[in-house]
Image 1: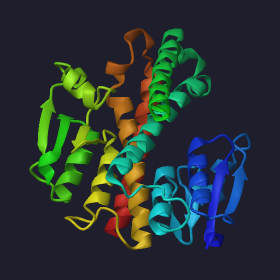
Image 2 (image 1 turned 90 degrees about the horizontal axis):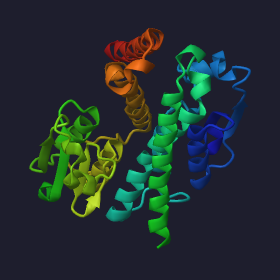
Image 3 (image 1 turned 90 degrees about the vertical axis):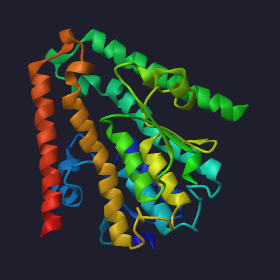
Image 4 (image 1 turned 120 degrees about the vertical axis):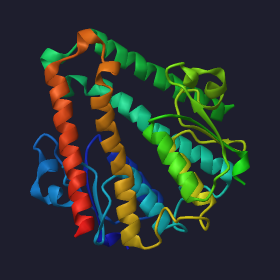
Length: 156
Length: 156
């Protein structure tokens, strides 16, 4: 059943990992996958643009259905294969609330990581500021500390 | 049943609207709501910080459960009140895929809007660049054109 699924992905992309982990957890091994080279610009190739006009990964096709948004793909797989593999959204209301809260909070962590790690790649040299980069790093530090706190609570 | 729900929200906040629309669509009128003043910094008050340590809106409590992430709150309400009010996630696989794709793509549109509209508020004066602001506006224009294309297809 995973044979009619195709995932275009790039190494080091957290949104791609999100979908790959969901596919594994839902026992959908055996899907088609194509590893793209960012350096060669393969994510902007016609093949990918036909599936994801944004020219981004993941690009994900499930039969004739396209869900390129990584969160969307995860929810789609959970809805379509509810009773298969790991239950990604718990039945219990309290656990469900916590899972959904942390799921989407994860995007904030990711965004703040990207802001720091991609600063030099995304911001043209003449627009860079030490003060801006310092602020982004402090914001990320605060975010990571928040997650450390969450993990601490889980351990207690 | 909505009586044990409380939403802290701020005027003009798209993530707040997201939750408010979901509450209405799921026929959960009658929830408690508190409109906060950003100008007065009420979103950083102890009352809000106790619910949402990020000091952001929406802050949303459903009984003893807290889901501040707007997407999380919407999915939580849909899961908990599946057969009540509007079905937010269609049963049909193709429609489901499209709804999930556009739902999360909406966040990209929102982010690009924020980047432009909040530029002067978020970027300190000495770090502002005409070139950066121009690029952000062009990016938003491209995004809006993409959505115009989606709407065009729906109309056809």
